[in-house]
Length: 111
Image (cartoon, rainbow, N blue to C red; front, side):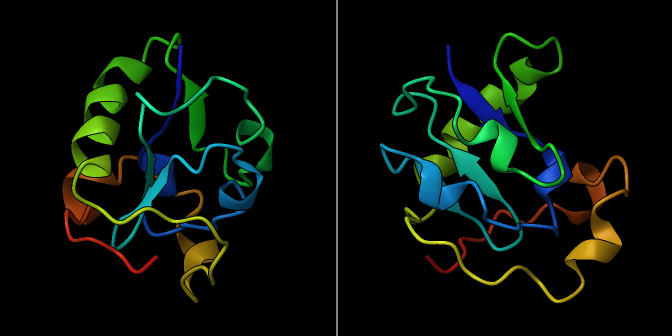
């Protein structure tokens, strides 16, 4: 089992989860984070740290799509090991549904 980041993170990117990860398996995109599913040790410490509940276990029904998206982008985005500043408008985006199609950026972020 692994944990994955879902579209809820898009444009929020709070990064509270990053510093608690014991294996540094988070990767930064321009407007969201992903977890490398092959590096995650399923400890679960990141899940409660996410203020918008964007992190879910891969056993959740909606997680199947996100495992592949997390894997794909973890292979090309830079590893992030420290919490950075969230976008200034993160709070405006935290309750917006269905962000992937219109707002996801495949560009790498800054670690």
